[in-house]
Length: 601
Image (cartoon, rainbow, N blue to C red; front, top):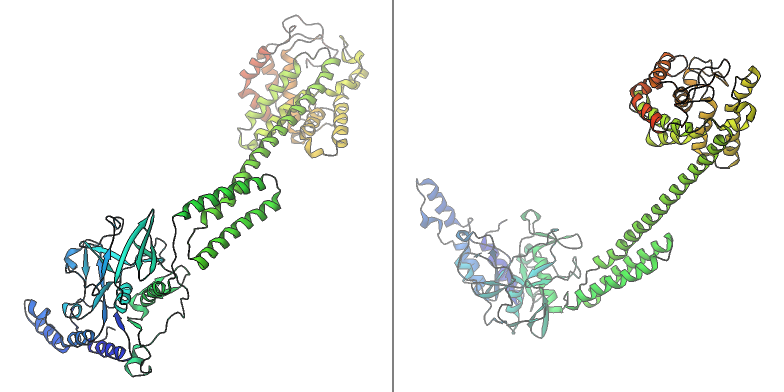
């Protein structure tokens, strides 16, 4: 390919001899046939000369002449190309040949939105002059690359010109009068008692009824060697074009297949003859909006009163129903009503209601969580109140130690060794602090509130209060049936049990050493001792902050965890502020004697 035009001439003659009423050549031949001997000779002479000879390049060739003679014998249509790029220098300004007797009537401005070409690229004058009519072969693809519609008429230099397929059909018909009308947003082309729906840009939506077997196909070779029976093309329109895939005349259609350009032209003729049209009537937008509204209300009503399974069935049914209805309208009535938005409506509503329900449930969960936290705080306050009621010297000790523990934990969280100490754990440690002395409720008042020195036997009883408190909480946790939900009590039990342990292992009740002591106990150990030092007791006076600071630093590594002491040193000013802001009323008075041989704390 390309074939020499004398061979095309023979093909046209054979098709006419088989009875073809119209032969439509889907070829663009704007130059002489370069296979013609005189053209070859002319080009050889031109190439041997130092300067080009324009007369040689425009020489008439005998091959084109033979094709023109064959075309002139009967009704033939020749294709041309409308140029929309503005390259007027490449486009011929001569007007294409309309089918004889073609008349188009139209109201003013009906083609205002139609695309307007800048020029036209036609075959050489010898061929266009021999053709009975010409038709443009332009077809614009949609943005996704698929070909769904083609223009039937396009304006050029004040007139409307037919497409290649329409020109062939008009040439085969005695009725060549076309009338355009518009009703609202609908544009209609009236021809031969047919109402052909067009979109606002003058395009016909293609109905690919049977892409593979709609039309009979003949190879040019079979026609040239005389295989078809005489009269086999009687009264038919014969479309002639190239079929090789390498020529690029393939078009993607909505089904996903690629069709040759000739099949597209044949589909247009088939649609017009069969009256098989796809239209989007004016009521389609209103129907689509009504469908969206109805489906929206129905879906909202059903989904707001159903569980997951019914919601899923509702969405699936709504989507499938919209698709089935859209397909049925298209196939049975040729009405294109896009099901996309109605199909998306139940899905969007499910997403919206799902998010709404999620938000409501999340709000309920947050409320339940706050209620649980409040209940936990109430439990802690209730239990710590027991300690305050029994131990008259407690005062605001519980409030201060809780803040000390929180400060120490937050400072530790800034160090690499304790980078896993997150906000929830810090809050858990602080929340557990008020319960550290709850075991004192099991100590007799005579010992707990004794103003003087404790005997060794009384001191031994006092040292049991960590075990008493831990046992009480253990029973509460184990008896709840959901110990995993009482993390704050688990943490409090560790703090109660170990806040009198010492880093060197000399503490009580178990004599734990170093990191064997839970972090909660190590934090409370320092917080408890600091508060005991700077607070007034019935058996001691309040020490200055500087003295307490020296004592704690002195016992780093023996009584206290060095890392906890380092955290205290980094935040000592915060400790002093809390001690001052939440001081007991008697902290400034003189102290009485120490309790026996006990240390000041």
